[in-house]
Amino acid sequence: MTLTISETRLGEVGFWGRLLGTQPKEVPLDISPEEIHKLLMDYQMNGQTGVMSTPMFNDSRYSVLRSDVLEDFVFKHHNRFQAEYIPDVYDCDDFAIAATADISKAAMKQRMKLPLAFGRTRFTRPNGTGHMMNFAITSDKGLMFYEAGNGTWISSDTLKGANFYFEL
Image (cartoon, rainbow, N blue to C red; front, side, top):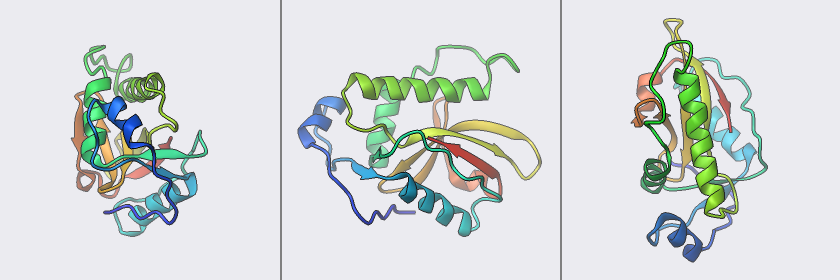
């Protein structure tokens, strides 16, 4: 799914080169919560999800990167090995919250102008089991999911039919 944004404001290429350590082929897009909400609703309407709660947004605009640039940024800045999995003590929600904090702190230290469209999602699978992981909005792939406990990107196809709650 490709992200289409009606109005975009491009960032500064030099800034992103310093942020990522290389000159990106594409500068990030500037996206509003309304545009993200529309993308999530399109995802739901295409039969990818079951019931979706209204997303919660904590900021007025977000930066959207191309998927390969975002994956590199997350790989460099998320401390995947900061804790071991302990059921009901340090589990999926703790890993997702820590990943969100790691990425937010890295963006702030790099003096990003806007927060990345990288947040958390809670969901219930069709079999009734719950889980929490991270999600991101990218300019080329749209919605992507990140399993912070093991540092892998998950295909949205594996989550088909789940009921979601998104927070950025």
